[in-house]
Length: 155
Image 1 (cartoon, rainbow, N blue to C red):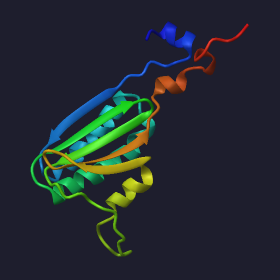
Image 2 (image 1 turned 135 degrees about the horizontal axis):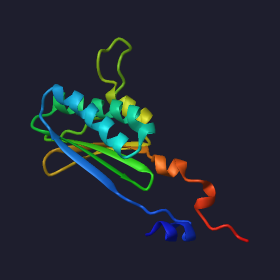
Image 3 (image 1 turned 135 degrees about the vertical axis):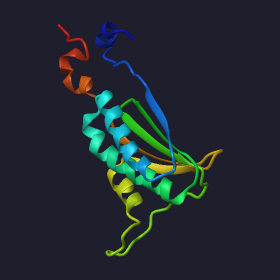
Image 4 (image 1 turned 120 degrees about the horizontal axis):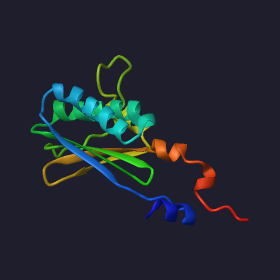
């Protein structure tokens, strides 16, 4: 849809942006995943979600590296105001939220995903499983668009 047509009809052009990387099953991949998250979301203009996405990605990739085996796939898609992140590994066991003691050193990752994301879940795949979360995503272009530019003004 052209920008002229979008202005006349009051509808925005929807674009689906996707990115995906394979990471090695080692602790250094958590750092790489955080960097890839920062870079890709900044490139897409999703600056408001960088910190939250980076934290949640590091939790999911860290869990995959610690509890799974084989390569880990990190994927993003952004469409229609939602950012979706998936972390896929070769372990078919789905994680679950658990209650941990106040002095426990681990076990809070999924709690953070649950609290900070719009929604999240997991599903078995042909290779193992994919754990995903979604965040609201509004890029800079949408924020900077004047309200009057969204629809024609009646005379």
